[in-house]
Length: 265
Image 1 (cartoon, rainbow, N blue to C red):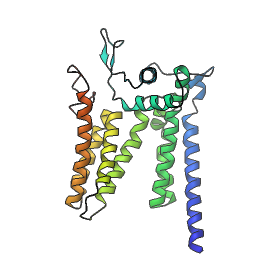
Image 2 (cartoon, one colour):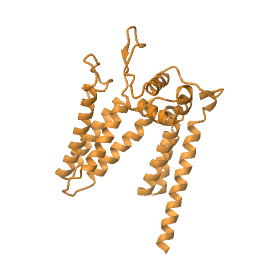
Image 3 (cartoon, one colour):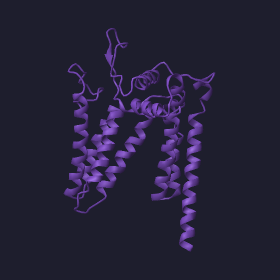
Image 4 (cartoon, rainbow, N blue to C red):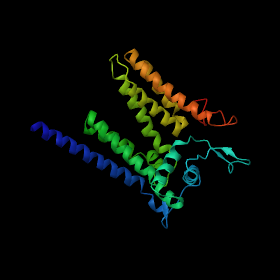
């Protein structure tokens, strides 16, 4: 009975910690609501956020089409420099909920602050569960309060930068999960999770190739046995095949540079 009481108390502390971090993070990320919403309509910055809005609305209106070559860019049109997963995921969610047009954007502007707040709270609780509440509180606040992290996840931010932190943590956690097992048995499920994390990262932000490279080096150096290396190899191979398959859907004049998902990756 005493152990049950301790367990319930620990669970309650983690729940309270999650709520506190979530409310704090969300409050900081929606403090710009007067500037982000005017007369009930979203106000987007005339930079990347506005262009992401265009891609989201394109996929909603022409589902499941992706805006990859935009005739309105440059003089004769140009390829969009971002991978498709972020905008397409938001468009799919909004379409499934029945939102279109300006109503869809009014909902989409909440994705970044909610994701940022959930990430800060969940990371804090995960660290607290493994290393204690003080460590979890520091970790959660380390994501919740820094101004650069607040800026990319504010209300009305539609750019994909808010997803970079969760994706990198997903890759790091999967690498730690794989490298932490010294048994000789190969578990394809772990390789699949790694493949999903790597592929999702690159289909959201090509610059996360650096994070994938660090993961490769970490597995190569830290894997305790050959079975772990095999799991890592499967994960990277599946991810590479997914990128290769995506590139095959694009015409020959698609740019071959690090900003455009394809051969370099």
